[in-house]
Length: 223
Image (cartoon, rainbow, N blue to C red; front, side, top):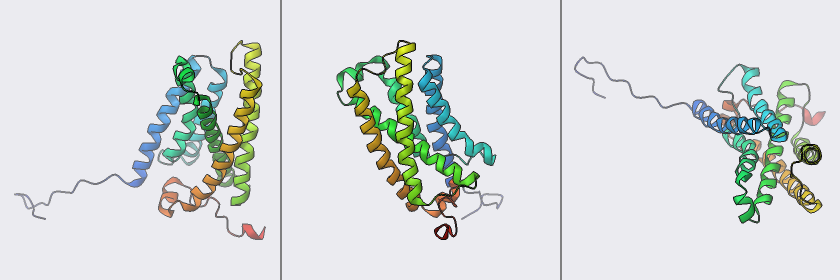
């Protein structure tokens, strides 16, 4: 490359590293989650406020524990965490809920994906920050059971809200059963998806995200 009049070769513009790009995409997705959480808190929507705060806590934990703002969750996982609260807020006008028959089913499935993501993150935190170690098969099982269990507690919370706060979360027993079916199906799907997700993730990306040792504990097969 030729230099300028002073004989100095101009520096080429540097491209942002993969670590920076990954973090920026994750921060954008987290901003959406944060704004939705603020909305439900201001709307005094207790159940969804708890959900939003819990999701934000799981997002911030790796960043705070590593003291590294670039050690953020993958953007696709953050979007999955955000999806049910976004769909919940979009139901506020009731237009989508009244005109699209499968909207409730979509919301329930998104809810399952998000809870499965929280379950997956919990296995990650346990593996990385405690003495608890899980092999891949048990981690998949844990994600599925966690999704189903939290969904059960959520339904209890909605019932109590209907009784004491006069909300209208549960319209019928059929609705509750359909939600359990969708959550179970979503938990099963996401359990196996996350098992394959980590296995298929390139080593370079696992290093960027701090997942390089997850489910790679030497000698776990020997007990």
